[in-house]
Length: 117
Image 1 (tube, rainbow, N blue to C red):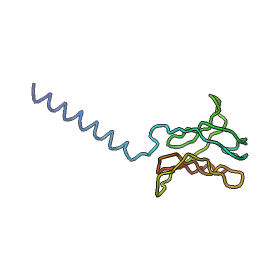
Image 2 (cartoon, rainbow, N blue to C red):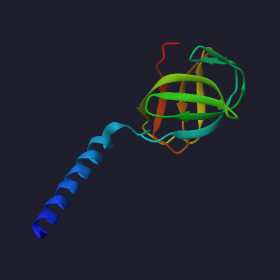
Image 3 (cartoon, helix red, strand yellow):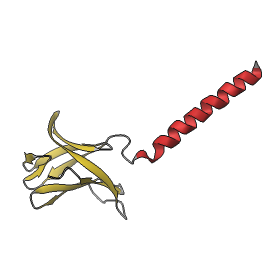
Image 4 (cartoon, rainbow, N blue to C red):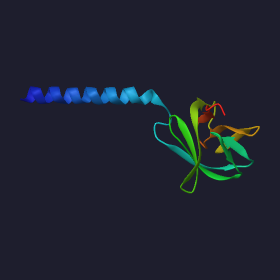
């Protein structure tokens, strides 16, 4: 009976190790990352025109969502990228009239917009 209990414990441990090691390399953003950011000039994201305002930015592994209050105002496909240093502040990066990147204060990872705006 004691040997059976040890075998079960070893099997459970092996399954847990496999689950966590398989999920570990998935992404920096396995959980949602969020920050409050100011958009300083009009820009588009995910086909939506945004006006200058303060937005709540939430990002997961594959998309970024901009909210004002509880209202979703824009979403876009993303890709996480690495920076050489931690970002000193959170920022929305606009190129021309399109949102291109989101940087998060204190993080080495940032978001590149990939929805082909």
